[in-house]
Image (tube, rainbow, N blue to C red):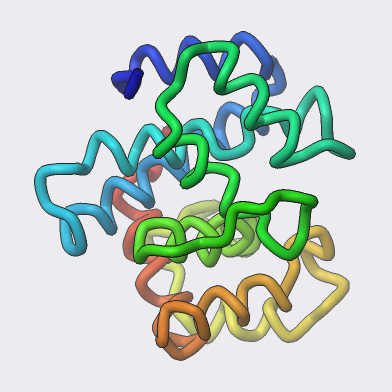
Length: 184
């Protein structure tokens, strides 16, 4: 089954209750939908569902991230294409065998950590928003390893490389994508 966004939200909420995790899932979903409009027009909902479900297991099973998620998604009858795509964001980080193979999976890999960093930078701004956030502000905080220390700079850089984008391009494009989902 390829769930609709509403069905994916219901599946997500079976395993996630914390506001932060639900918000992160919605942000990543919106970012994925934004990139789908450019890279895979007509499949925006599929990309959004992948973004929504990518961390399905993280709240309850952080030590089994991207392994337990595969199991949970299968228990819910979710299509293998969604399982591969969602679990591929943990490749090389978590013990998942699913490597990012296509542009959608590579964008998810790159943007997942980056949305957390960008969100943290936005919160520190007087506006508290990405609407007026620019690349130099994010790059400055990116260089400060103590700021949003849980957001892996190595993963973000590797994601940009996998996409064939510069780090600056990835950050800038992700800021723009996050602006489309501000307020979620």
